[in-house]
Amino acid sequence: MRCSGHGTSVTPRACARAAPAASAQLSFGVRHIDIAAQYSPSEFVLHAFQTKPRCLEPFTANAIAKPAKWLDPFDDACYFDITCSCGGTQFTVSGHWVWAQEKFFTSPHSLECSACCKAALVFDIETHGFDAELGHGSSYLRGTEKSTTFACPQCDGSTFEVVIGINYQIGPMDELTDDEKKKMQDLFDGFWINVVCTQCEKPSLVTGYECA
Image (tube, rainbow, N blue to C red; front, side, top):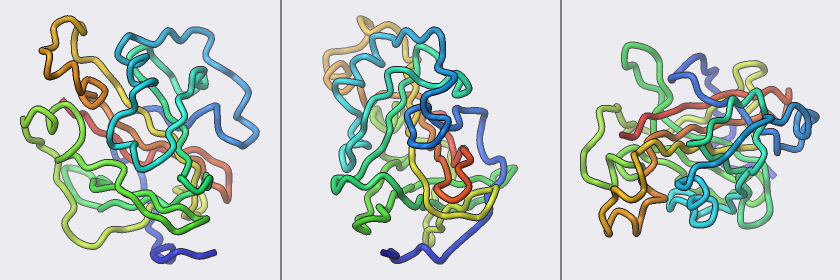
């Protein structure tokens, strides 16, 4: 099955701050090797494992308890292996190329399942994350024109397995207000889209954001 929009291909290069590239829980050969020796999720991460951020609600987001060593995991970050509600595990990733000192693949970002062609929003800098949730605004440019399909920087492939990285470095949990505690899974200060190409099996960082 070929879904609409898969014909567009733009080769991305470095587009964001350094961030995890992919997950050890993917279905390729790297899946079960080189697991990080030490990973002790923070209380925010453990909460997010149980109560997923609302940006992931359109998908089945499987928490990765043992991320890969080369993902450079740290205790304030959590990682989710993304699956469609139909069971599909391969997606195209859409966004918008803009210039902000350098070429950047910006939000809104949607994932489209290659199996059933269902597309859903996964991240919008004006809607998701710490600053958006608390009404602080954002300095990131946001795409307004027709979206573009991300292409693998190695082979120009357009179908990927997807891992979302989310970071929580927002201070002690007991310093949150009662209202903030009710939605603390949504108060993340970092968000990354990581993929592994289904064509060449190489990992890539699609894009990443500081959300606070």
